[in-house]
Amino acid sequence: MGADLNILRQDLGRFDRRFGIGPACWPFFDLLWIHSGSVQIRIGEADLTLRAPDGVLIAPDVAFEGRSQGADASICHFNWAAPDLAFPQGFLRPGLVAGADLQSMIRLLHRHAGQNASLEIRQRLLRAILDGFSPPAETDPPSRVDRAWQEAREKLAEIRSLQDVAALAGLSESSFRAEHRAQHGAPAGRHLQRLRLRHAARLLTTTGLTLPDVATQVGFAHAESLSAAFSRHYGQSPGRYRRAHRHLA
Image 1 (cartoon, one colour):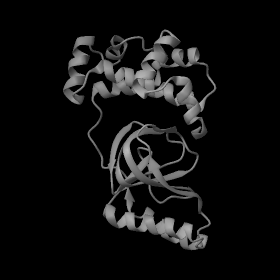
Image 2: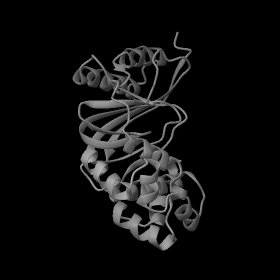
Image 3: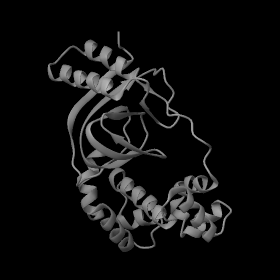
Image 4: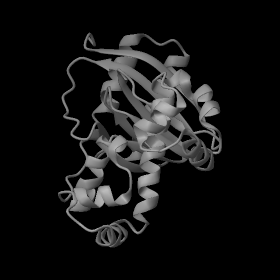
């Protein structure tokens, strides 16, 4: 019983609003549940807002990162040899089971861990919890603007300006800016800057690259420019961010 599901770690805690969530990319499943408060999290290519009671089941080897305004949360890391569900976007959200019901089950799972209940009991409960998750609802195909952003994300080192991103969509820069704002309600230039900084944060915590090398990888001309933009966005220098988050690598 339960040979294909092995619980590795369970934890309860609080996300401090002063620090980011990740970036991380675990080699196992991660059940992240928000018990109070809310978090904004990017998983793969998707941006999610989780407001308690809510959570997400993240598949192995899927990168994620986020921020919180203050939230009580729990995590359960586990290996799952043969999951019954597909993970089309690298994660699953709660399905037909109401969030409050799942939250009660998740709290019970952590209570069992604190009381040193048998692994078999916790495995059975975790299986019941997993039954409450389902694939994300299908959405419309991505627009040409979003397809261009997806391609740009894969080749940030080659993207020198917004004009390069617009060219991927077959648009002039002004038309691309207009279409991006119409779809997303924000400036395209700001989105490009955030893509660069998110990737820089991921490289800082998961590689040993020097700051000049990170700057090159994410499309900044100089390490000093990256450092200044990074400090404004994350509230701390790249070096300090690396020291604070490197344990997540």
